[in-house]
Length: 75
Image: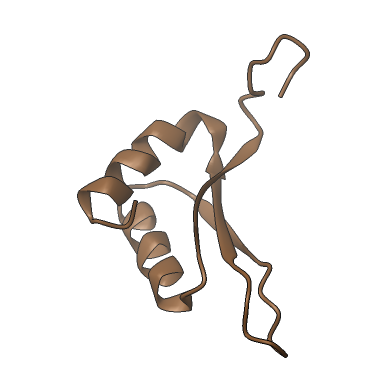
């Protein structure tokens, strides 16, 4: 975010998180089909099997991405 509270257009924002890798992969595929680039950061601990995988999109694509995920019952 910039000093005035607006997000920089080149910044990334978290759009979704899940502890289930299959949900993340489905979300990535849905967003990709819509032309929305995304990437994931795995914050889960494989030793203890807890934590989430987070999915990020460009800030200017956030609303489109949220709409797609809601329409597909992921959000």
